[in-house]
Length: 403
Image: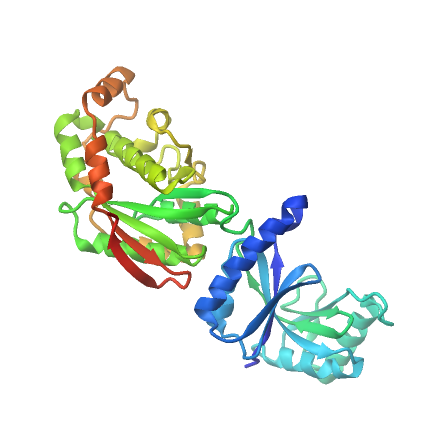
């Protein structure tokens, strides 16, 4: 197994940012450094070279460290590279070592060369053709496939050395977390909200998670499940905080005072109200949910419209046009799928009416809101919330009561 002490990090959308590019690079650099601090407790040097980040370390990077760095939004790809002195006669041997490290003796390959150092006497095409020829002579079981190779040998020519690489790890792309506002993400135990969180991490949003815990109507296992989901999502940003808000008393009070068919939509409305209050406390910019239009009764166009009218902050819904199959497929990529499938109690389902309203009447909606002010109850619930802090490595670091 080859050990790597140099990593090349390709950025995604940062080159589109013009005069603001520097601030995006600084944000991404800070996120990478936080990840390295958590995963690679050795000396390293992080620089920008030839329009990409390079990390050089005195000791090899572990697979876990490379995967953790590659999860950072804003990056397009992580490439473990080897630095070879600018001596053409010394180039073949490390390339053969790279190829030998891949599974099997028979696979297709292609050599791709990028000559950043234009004064080098051989051009990119000459290097690729000649190296391909030498590889076939040394490893006759391999075959060339220029369109769809199983392994691509990349050679980059720089003023002082060659870089060679034959493997890479894909990254989320998008923008670095911390460059596009702070969201309060309403987290649930299903597939949707964790995937929505991932999508908005890619858009550069820092997130604080909130879960409305309907104790005593549900058990501890649902809280444990939410913490596990937050641990995964924390690895896509520079750690996070998770607020577990006790909401059972509020739900019971709503269920006793509203029409049965309106319970679900009013549960939703007051969760949004509570999230608004949390936005104010934390000076966040917007709310984030995993809503998909028409997926459940609270997500019909009529119910979404009413809830939006009562929110003082914008509500972002990146999954609004997704179907369930698309969301589940993305949850597998994100790494939350196997947690989301774990069964858990759901107080909303326990209180849910047999026929929930899907076309709510404005008159009753506004009448109930005017007659029932839950602001004091919601603030009390926030005051009693457990706040978990989770590091960028997905480890729980502390838990405290919000007060």
